[in-house]
Length: 171
Image 1 (cartoon, helix red, strand yellow):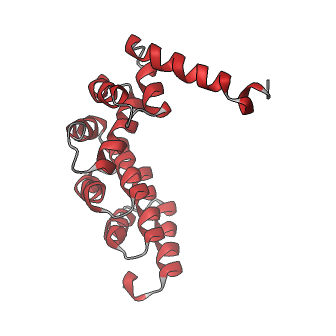
Image 2: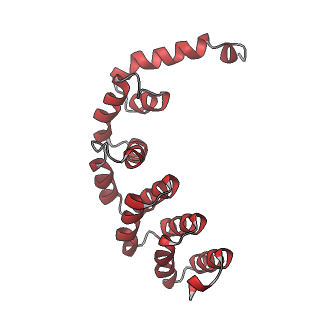
Image 3: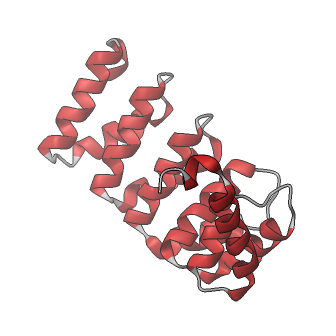
């Protein structure tokens, strides 16, 4: 029945059920994870994050692996974390050495770093060692773990900021 209506109606129905807290909403939201409309899928994943219902783990994992939208994949990983943090941390840790899926690897680096999961440090070091992959974000994430190997790059970043007229003129 849900698929007979246009996008706005599908969004409204899904949001309405989710806000009412009805258990049937989880089933409905799981159905629309494959909707052609990106906004509908984003909304469904966001509301599944609020439910943190274990029935959603398999479908959210599939979304993390397969959705074409990077943002939806990240939201699915966050929803998985809300549902089962240990499962998700292990799922993400498996992505650290996988280079075939750069989106999954980037999401894994972000979320594992945010969690303080030290399994991400070797990858952060590899990315920091290579000037082509070293970014301020990578160096800051490595520094957030208190890893002394980040110090030279952090000093370099500070020096660049100090040498940049747009920063030094501001204050």
